[in-house]
Amino acid sequence: MIAHVLLKHIEETPRMPIKTCIGMVHSKYGKTISKRKGFLGRRRAFETIFRTWESSFQALPGYMAALQYANPGTVVQWRLLKGKIFEFVFWVFKPSIDGFAHYKNVISIDGTYVYG
Image 1 (cartoon, rainbow, N blue to C red):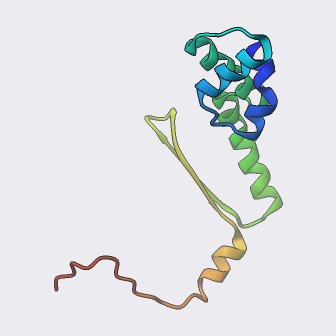
Image 2 (tube, rainbow, N blue to C red; image 1 turned 180 degrees about the vertical axis):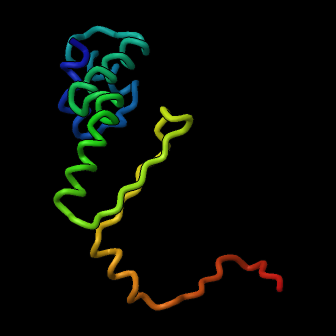
């Protein structure tokens, strides 16, 4: 019930504060809910709209395979910690790789304490 009240608002503002969620339920039903119920309702609404983290990571290999199939020459690299904890995925398209050869060399110094 709480998630149903929050669905369209979570879609517009995924990082909605829990206090705002509690206020929305209170304005809709006239009942005050706990922070825990507000948190769980917000999480359920978020997962209804955007799916869970686990399902997103499960879909990622298929997305990367489709990306490589649709864009031949695309480079994809993964890194997992201890073989099962996702750290990052990197991809670059072939036109970007080819265009990199035409960049001009630039030296940039950031900071005021340069010694040597």
